[in-house]
Amino acid sequence: MKTISHVYDSYSAANDTVRDLEAAGIPTVDISIVANKDIARGHAEVKELPGSPTGAGAGIGAAAGGTAGLLAGLGLLAIPGLGPVVAAGWLAATAVGAVAGGAAGAAAGGLVGALSETGIPSEDAHVYTEAVRRGGTLVTARVPDSQWDMACAIMERHGPIDPSLRGDAYREEGWDHRHDPARMSETQVDRIRNSGYL
Image (cartoon, rainbow, N blue to C red; front, side):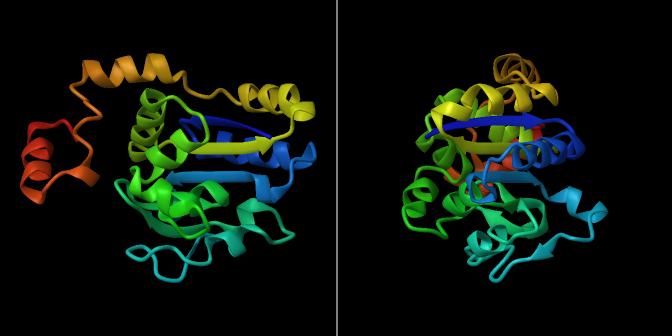
């Protein structure tokens, strides 16, 4: 199995990506979606999962495993270092430490740690996390080698961001992934937020 991740600026593009992956035969249990919490306002199917948004999000794995598809299991939960998000699937569960092996991802930095564990370069993981923080939606799929090219084509078809270009744009605005709120005191976060970097 290989893992592919992309962030989309619009939730609808990510939604279409998930539906196309499922239609192509990628099992729902191998797909994850993590979106900015603000998309919940426009989607009645989003529900708060047990313990969320401040808890560990227990139950997200089960919510994603239904026969209605991944999007039927969307829930509001909190990911360390990112805060409240709308999510479903194995990657989100790993990021909150809700499944076996997930504690390592959470300890390494929530979504950044979970993405890094899938083989995403650290710099791209930080950019993807920042993109979600700013309103984007992350889609991740685990696929066998035999479906890799097809899954990549589906995910590219819906216009994902380029993490290198997006990271450059964020840095031009003053963003620095070393200013990760998960690793700072409230005073440090307030100081950086007031400077416009967060």
